[in-house]
Structures are given as C-alpha cells and as structure tokens.
Length: 221
Image 1: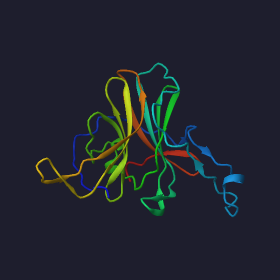
Image 2: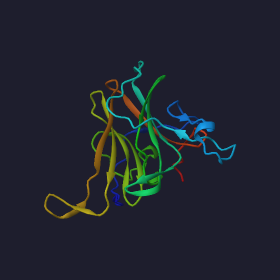
Image 3: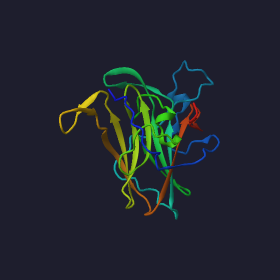
Image 4: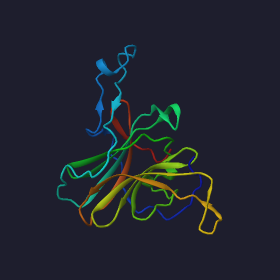
C-alpha cells in the first residue's frame, strides 16, 4: 500500500502554462479497427478502444530535436481499462504516456497503467506543493490510492533527462536511528533522453477521452 502523508514544501519550480483548448492527441496511440477489435455486441456508435504501444525502455532520442531551448512535457492520461493488478482481476488502471516536445518534434514515453485517482492538490502542474519534489525533479504526475505513485521526470542539468516510475508506501519506516519515520519513495527507471543544455521545461496534464481527444486537466475540481 502507498503512504497517505503529505509534507508541504515550496512551490514546484516547473513553470505552468495556460492549457490550450481541447485538441486531438498527438499520433502516439492508435484507434483500434472496430470491425476487428471491438466485441460483436458492441454498440455501432461506440468508439473503438485506444491501443497504446508497449512500455518504453532505454534511450529515446528520436526524432532529432530542432533548434530550441524549451521542452514542453505533456502527461496523457487515457480512459481506465480493467487489468490484473497485484493478483486482483478487473482492477481499473489508467494507461499513460508522456510527450516531450521541442518545436515540431515530439518524443513519446509509454508507461505501465497506473492505479488511483488524480487530485489537483498533489499535481505540480497545477501549481500545488502537496508533495515534496525530490532532487532535480522537473515534472511529476501523482496518483492517490491509499498512498501515492505515478511518474516523474528528473534532469541532471547536463543534458540528460530520466523518466521514472515511483511509488510511496503507507505506514512508517524506521529511520537511521530506528525511529518511525515517513517511508521513502521507491523509484524505477523507465527511459532516458537527451535534451539541449540549458533548456527549460514546462508541464501540463491532459485527460484523453474515448475518441482520442485530449482535454486540459481541471486544476480547480
């Protein structure tokens, strides 16, 4: 289980931009062929399911970046799907992608589906300081379900970005002196990519509907 404690900190340093109007998601997922993939008894007007590529890994350095010094990071959260999660069948999980864009070039990272709900209070993209950022974090997506978990982006300042999956258990863990303390997050590297030195970063969250249209996350809800 993930931890449910909150430690207020200073505002996350990543700049928040005004979210654009709803627009089609980038070509990072395909819409399944209704005649092949949809169940035979599915309503004729039901949108076919969205199919994501396999989970990303290794270095993601294509396409080549054009000239530019700002990376726009877009978290794409897709409609939940039933999956087996920690031995529990039909658990509703949210498929995820991260799109990094400079100018006309975009690189895409696909993650394992995540458990839990998105709440504005914990999203640094909403200007919140509900969860403390770790060292060199520039973007973070937080799901809550008894504890916390999600994805994060870390920049080493020298042109390398790491994208990681993270989770934080609930309860308490012993500190260096054997006293109960908040458990530290667990992290697992998903992928890396190079970015221009001296680049700046922005982030935004989009919820993608069944038709593949992405909508800016409502930070006021």
